[in-house]
Image (cartoon, rainbow, N blue to C red; front, side):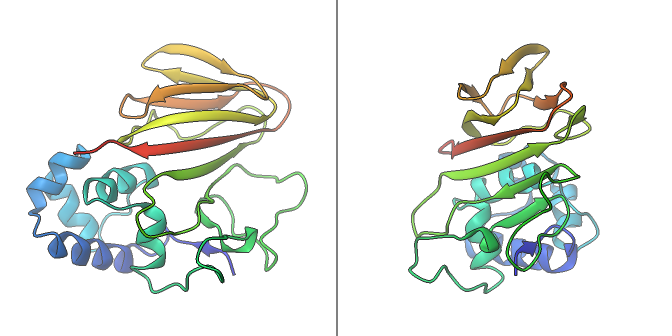
Length: 205
């Protein structure tokens, strides 16, 4: 079954605490790496705060790993059959409705979604995120940022990428490359669904 992972803050927080402690990091050091306060990190670790996936990505990237690793190894989810391939039913749903048993939505999907589609592999830090937006919707209510360089590839339709107030249109078949540390937003301003792939390479600390 696909995994919808952000709705269990208690277990997420416990796993984050174990990972942080295994690195001998303080709450303050992790907060500084992720651009949040140590109080915020403490709330996440205690299960009292449910972080946006982009904030969690900054945290785990700061700790030298990926969201894919975090939600497979930290939660003891089996690796893909051959250790490399990740099938549609194995993708990690970080925003949007759960998939069915075959890892599918109705066609076309009726709600926006964000999935991590990268298979877990030891030493692989690059993550690929699939973003689907229905007409006239946004990726998040406010601009987000995460510690990594991003290459966005337009799979279907058009999206508006706004980076600190500057607008760029991502057309189907085109790419945009930008610093994900800068606050940015994706919007579907059209009357048709749009789909993009974001390849995120963490910045070394």
